[in-house]
Each structure stands twice: as structure tokens, then as C-alpha cells.
Image (cartoon, rainbow, N blue to C red):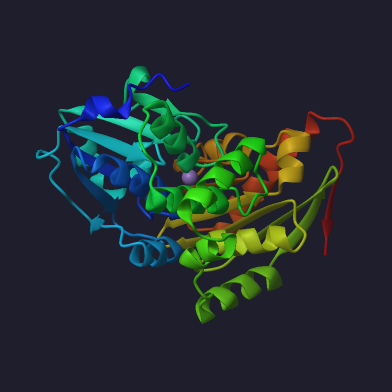
Length: 337
Ligand SMILES: [Mn+2]
């Protein structure tokens, strides 16, 4: 860990900080903390491929974080690029081709599982799957590089840790240690930080979640409640909502024009106690049947592929989950109708 060279060695370089497409709070905050620490000695620009999430957009506006949402952006002007909060080109949206064609050095700052195809060398990869947020890695990197973490960078780091730990569900003692220091330096209270990225639920989001709950099929696999549902938008929010109201695992998907999209969420209970990993045990194996790709974290992951029948794909998610538990003691299966 932390084999990457210190940040001061980038002095004078022209750097692009690129987040994943659909940039979330952790991604924009990790990029911003780097931006505010590097901008004195470097030319830095934050690029967001395709689109930014509403909470991240709200926070960036309130903190005056400069960023450019782009579908295509020549990277020729930059000496090096930092990919922030992803390490899989599939998460780079429409910038994927420009990134893979980039001639300069590429650095990774990320806490997702390593993609099969590596985009950067090992010595340029600050990737740790055990980190709660990319902001944690940025914090460590800034510290090791003896960079000053100012008020706004501290605010960003705190926000990234809060959101990516799902409000401390996945937090550990280090999360609180970094948060304690960052809050102090941010000169803000906890609620002032959370108000930076809280956005009101839209009407459509509420309806999507309620529809997902209404259409849910409920299963018991061993000791865990696993649900599947389909809804045309806000799949990942709907899956999170289903876990909040009692499911241990939730798969919510949709098909449109032969394209298939499934979001999965799993409780810490099933991830920690059973060792269940959505990305590894379900989504990566879906590609064999529904040619596409899946990935993410153990407790939050997604799949996109080809298919017309969402029920078929959701049934496959259930059978792949069953396969995992079949190998364990006390396996049982039941559908609640
Ligand atoms: Mn993240």
C-alpha cells in the first residue's frame, strides 16, 4: 500500500483528475481534495465523464469546486492523469477511449476491486479495496506527501467518508480518526457537512422505490432474506431502500431495447457474516448468460448486459446466490408468496 510517489514530485505538471462517469460524492470529493492541494504548484483540472450525481453536483456547487462534465475531451494537454474512484475503463464512460489512448503516465486512486484489465502500472496504483472511501486514500496520500490539507479539502474528505461508508455502516476506527481530524480542520459541524450533499428525494425516485417494494419477490436463502424486483429507473436507490426495510440482499433491474441493467445491494450482515460478495459471486458470473459486465463492491454492485427478459436475469441472480449458500452449512431455500 502507498507505493505511489509523493504528490510534491508532480510539481509543475499539468494534471487531469478524472472521476468515474456518474460521479458520486466520494469521487468528486477525492478529486477536489487533490485539486485544492495541488493547484498551487500545478495546473489541475477535474473532468467528469458523462454525468454527475445530484448529491455530488449540489456539494460541488456549494464548495465552488470547479469541474467539467464532458463526453469527449482531448487529454493531449496533460502530462499525467489521475483516475479517481475507479480502476476499470468500463467506469470511464465515453472518456474510455481517450484514456486508453493517453500517452502520459496514468495513476489510480481507488477502493474498488481491481479490474481484470489493468490500466496503470502497480507503482502508479494507489488501490486498496479495504479502504472505506477513495477520500481515505487521498487523505493518506496527502499526509504521506506532507501536503497541507486545508479547510475545503478537509470538508471534502469528511463528506466522501460519510457517504461512501453509507453513514458509517461500513466504517472502522480509521474512518472515525480521519473524520475527527477532517471535521476539526473543516471548521464545520457534522450536520453542516451532510447538508452539503443532501438533496430532496424527487417524486419519481419515491415512486420507483415504492413500486420496487410492491413488485418484490421474496426468498429465504439459508438465514438471509433475498429479494428481486424490477423498476424502470432509480434501480440502485430502490435496491438500497429494500435493504433498509429488511432485505439482506436486493437485486433490482430493468430492460430497455435489449439492454439489461441490474443493481444489487447487500447488508453488512450478509457480507461480513457469510462472506457474500455481490460483484464476485453474482454479477461477474452473470456475463456468461447475459453478455455484459459486472462489478463494484461486495455490498453494492451492478451489472449491464444484453437481454430482453428481466425476470430471467433476476431469477439467475437468485440461483447464483443460492449456489453460494449451497456450499455452506444450514442451506435452505424458500419463496414467500
Ligand atoms: Mn468511492
